[in-house]
Image (cartoon, rainbow, N blue to C red; front, side):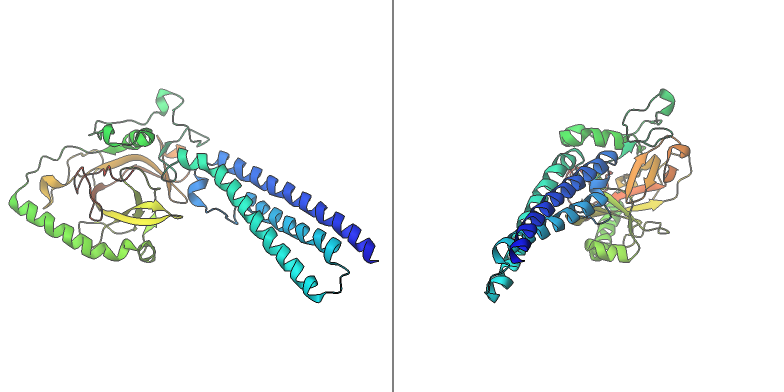
Length: 343
């Protein structure tokens, strides 16, 4: 009886290992297909995410492989021995060795499969152009009618942008409009700005911990976009109170962690009126607005020419926005729209 169990158990163990490898490879194939179909997926999941069916198959394949790696050797070399120590220790050692080696193998394969995606989509998902009807992520519109209008605005100096980010920044800037601010800058303006920044730092210091910001109602509505970071928006909050910004600007990711870089303040804007608001910041303020934005679930944003092209929340024109880089140096200026250190 023992010999029969040894022979069949050894064969069953190897059969399970083969089955486990097949399931694992199927999981990797499903995961690769999902990432190819949705280029934003990498920014919304960790190394292993149970909501991803490909990852579930990978886990299942590893489990079956580990069971097979234990069953085969146990039935061949341990079953029938009189030593209680060997009978107990052998499967424990086999499980540890199989689990460690299988996990290391799956991690290495997963890292290799996502390496190209992380290089191509640096800083999570980027702002992309949405095509009509199918909402696909093609940067080229199909016809002139699909092109988002681009009123004149002050473009940023591309020499300060890393080559791999220039296309993303150029596309993002097609939505940004920054009319010239011709208001004066006086000694009172400078004193007000100095106090404003001090109050902003004091009021937002607690939000250096992104968990505190989220607990206070801030929601991520964009990925980490080069030059301007990720925008965490608090609905219903508006105005120029330095301690209560409408938007917090972070750099990083869910996996790496978020670093607070600054804040953004909002004021109402009359559509079609491009006169920057008059505030005590005077000509120091880089007031700007965005147009044709489509906010998607999961903290992603695309560009859409019209409402029907947007699969999420469409915003034809935002209110006035003012960035304040209170927690990061900015070569372009503390109140500038862009910060070239955020690459």
